[in-house]
Length: 223
Image (cartoon, rainbow, N blue to C red; front, side):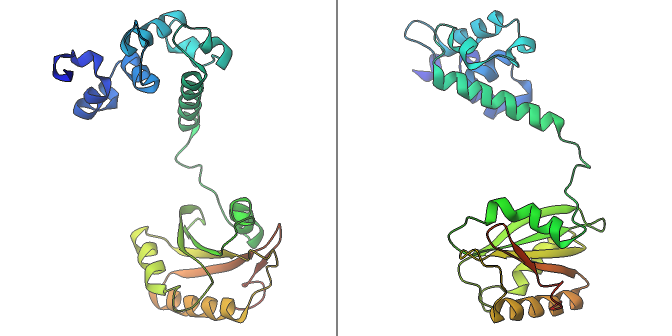
């Protein structure tokens, strides 16, 4: 019965009770491993893994091959450990001030181009910026053909207020690859711009994304 298993051998339960910060390294590794072997508990396997690599200092640079050399560690477990370590490294490298700054239509297009240019449906997104034009938040507003009745200013500016945004940039893609704005694109842009003026939240641009091409409706004079 699970109630008879010592808590140190139930790291997931301990994490739920006390939080991840109070778990030992072996308990955290146990959670990543998920299971032990026929003859060894996951906790013991985790401890043996850490002993082999002399703790986290060497484990953080281990290769898949080195991890698989440990008895009980297969390819799936090795990949999961490496992915978790890499994610930890990236989080550690983050700095509070490292926010993307948008000063031009080109920079706005660059921010969303790779994720939007190959989409098979239209996606309408908003970027919420602070007074320094740093991106605070990115949100997909809707997916489907652009229509003024669907792109409602209330939803966009409610999020802008929630994020304390000073301005917004909207963007949507044309699956055809041609970023030429439609009349509906222009209508939506003007409607959102007018609503933003009333709320004191400036709409800086509406960018239409094509296949490695874009059109700024601000540059076209529609804002």
